[in-house]
Length: 265
Image (cartoon, rainbow, N blue to C red; front, side):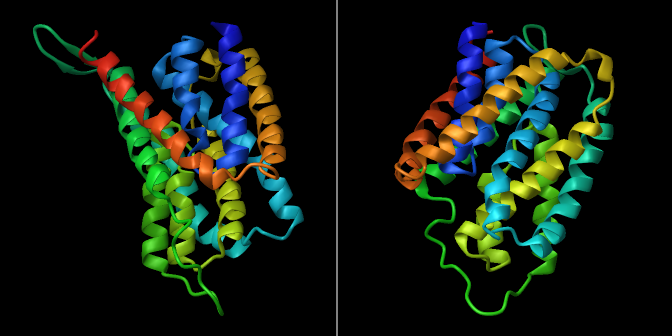
């Protein structure tokens, strides 16, 4: 299972490199079901892996001047604060047993997996239908819808803190619609935002002694290798054509997690 897990870790990076937003959605299932990491801890591991991989992936966009730093700051600051506060205070405050009946116990880990599966399904729909690729890109002077940008940044931050996903499937269309960024610049800016909020959110995690740094380092290394492979493949393969296929795969996985964690327990 570990060998399969390492191969799947490469796939995380490949997906990020090929399709951008939504690629990191595989990280938590890989950690939980292939490496048998506790679901709550897996969301913390995911923040580190996604953050580090996104930072590496954003480097080529930085070289091509496809990162809008003003937008990254306006969207990223509330998102960073929200993800840090979520990991530092909201997640630890959740009770270990959230819901109990005579025949069923819903633990904190179960709740986070179910919430994650809902996010997976939402992400899959955005990938199947298109998550902003068809949105008309802005032209001329950039205009900011500050209230909506700040609000969505905070919402994405809380969501990232709870489930450990980067939220690119939400960030990219928001940057196109609310900040009027061209698509390529939105992708590069999104990667910078994801990297910053995920890594800083990871710092809000308590109990560092429970972290398996060896596993975390190896999975991160494989994911980084994957993003180089995905970036290379993107020059020959149209990621937009692959995104709906990947979306269906994520949808099936999301439904499978719900079934496994409820009806098959």
